Length: 189
Image (cartoon, rainbow, N blue to C red; front, side, top):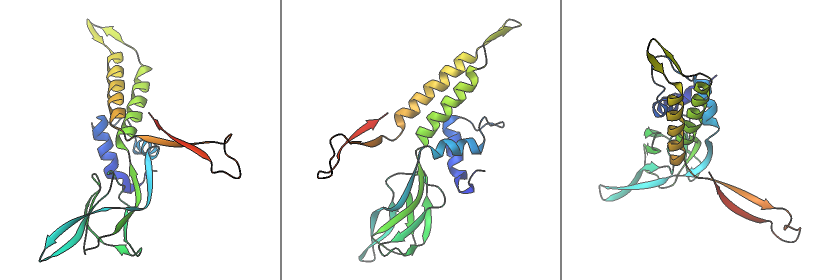
């Protein structure tokens, strides 16, 4: 069963892939599975404060996350790990306005890479259509292959917009008990 705090994320993903018509191609559970493949769980991720000068003092009530597309269950804390009340937020862009000034605010919750998830969902849609075939009837031609090609093209475009992914590899052949493990970071497409 899909998580209710993801309703806005589902709507944005459906908009990206063009699945907003009356009869939807994908269920919320299918979209949630695709999104969960591209989620990041944040624990006390520091937010960037935006200083606002008012009444002769600098206040910090506006904070920005590095990434957007947050699940609706995000929790903010201050430097002492006390709860911070959110006045308003735009989870799509990662903007949080808090009720009282605080220069150090941290976010805990889940955010998603919508473009990576959109690419996966569009590929799945193209795969479903690939099982169908082109045909002609009554002088008209119906081409499913054209729709499949367009879905794959859209998936490629969304992959180009997705966030970069890195993996840390450890070469256990060169690591010994006396030396730190050798590691390298590579970008993965």
